[in-house]
Length: 314
Image (cartoon, rainbow, N blue to C red):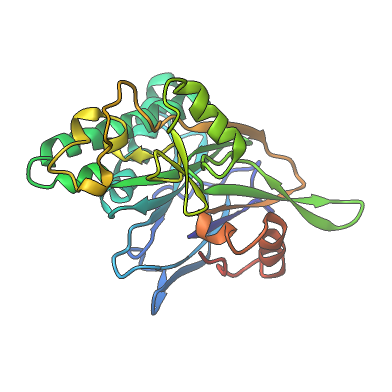
């Protein structure tokens, strides 16, 4: 899935279009062509937004959204835009839960703190994680497989000339920036990915689990956490966070031989704060399905050459 926020005209001069939102598969302005869902560029409070997704499975496990308008329930200003890309796995429950709850938590904490900040976003992630844990707790006895459902979570918040990028998982946000001297729009990666294929992620896992030599395992030439999953951070995946859910009647392929005392995966997002510059043209938010096929620069070139079309796909 991929979403594009175009800053070109209005990033630092917000326009109010409160209530505008686009959710994959549910937005009346969106279109469907077979397994391709897409929405052409439309106006949000801080620029233009377009979206596209190629549905890989018959059951859609991913969600994305844009929320535009006031980011505080108590104060109609400043106007801002929220973008979320939720790449689900194991089922659709977690990504749908994030889609229904993350933005509401963010507005609640922004209202309490009377500002937007990295701390507000971090609290929204934790509240969403806690909420899904409650769902798992309630449904575990009748639907134990829900403990193995999770989602990567990439969030962007644009407010008062500042772009916040928060990521848990292996989705990615890439900025297109104009170089005036050459006229070229170059790619700048804004997010950090949490995938065991990266040496720094494996080192982080080994450092936080020094007594577990099997915390990362090379399986079929792919690095996986406990031999099960490539990502080290997510919302959900409770079977690798709470030992009481890593047991029967959960399917045996998800059960570890030994119990664990501390969570193996984390829901803590990596957060980057970027002050928007006039040379910043757009940002691409996409799941790993896009980045497996395109480099950062190739994706930026694609958007730059088709600036009014929601043509990215994953």
